[in-house]
Image (cartoon, rainbow, N blue to C red; front, top):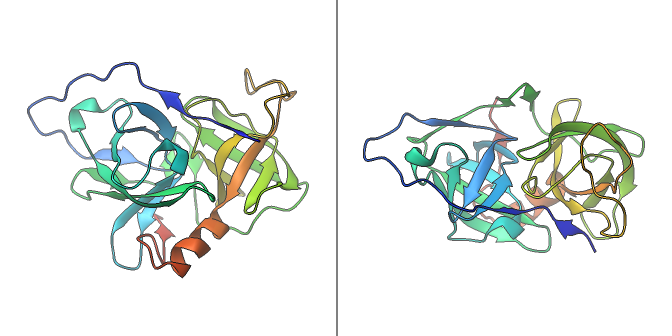
Length: 221
């Protein structure tokens, strides 16, 4: 059983009265859900209805949960979770385009589009709000449907972090592969439990089948 990588917020600073400029958000940005949980945004773009859509892990929050940006408390609520699936561990966020400027590059971590599920031996990379950038080999499918096992670093707060192969999004961080193996302390030491990644293709297929917000999603370019 994998352990979710969610972090709790101790305290948030009250928002300022004046309006802040739009917040720049992209895959790898830190987000705060319901003012209490730190997670990572997987990606951002538009669906076939033209809505500004983002994704993160379902264990960060469910439909109706409000989302703000880490480090931009004065900007207030930027979006709301509008759909999700606990089994496939995705949450769909609809952002206010007046409050958010989407980007495909966060701290040099680039998302150039969507890619196929990675195969054994391919190197996957991730950007999480807690452990930052790390890469590792793909071991193959996980034990549960829609899961992939990668040797990348993950800690609480990295839930939802984008996982890419050759700058193409293939998944989001779900949790640690095993609680019985050493956890990742620093990304420079690779002797730790692998991370479980949820296949983004599997998640999008579920969204499309149910005609949920996020159907026809295209990441910002």
